Length: 142
Image 1 (tube, rainbow, N blue to C red):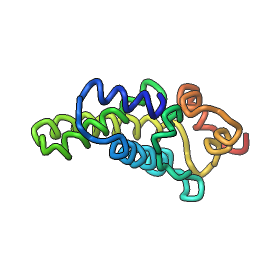
Image 2 (image 1 turned 60 degrees about the horizontal axis):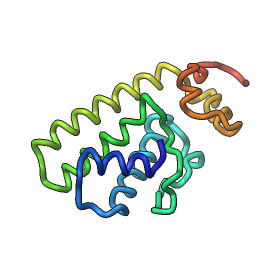
Image 3 (image 1 turned 90 degrees about the vertical axis):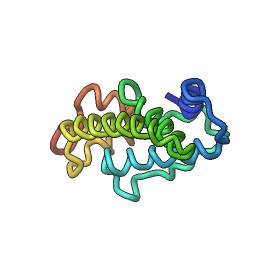
Image 4 (image 1 turned 90 degrees about the horizontal axis):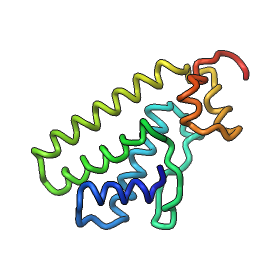
């Protein structure tokens, strides 16, 4: 999923009056959290997630089936900022469920201390390929 795909999908599913820069900020927030909290990247390994309108074709870290976490987060943020607290409760539960599922899945796949995942990313392996192959569970040098 690209930045533009995500924003368009959210706008189609949940029409809102928020300007693109606000939604880009929220998308940057969740992408940074995924990098640091899910993939446990060191601060030096985390690139700056600060999406701009010119980055519509930029590919997000997660592919299906995990990319719906971006949509859930943006919908929850929209409900929160609109003061729609009944809807926010439901949206936050959906986001938290997706976050916990992704966290558990990734935690079962790899040990961050072995560095395998990050070396593979440097070689150009897409995140989804590593998730699908379960390759992040390999110990030692690859």
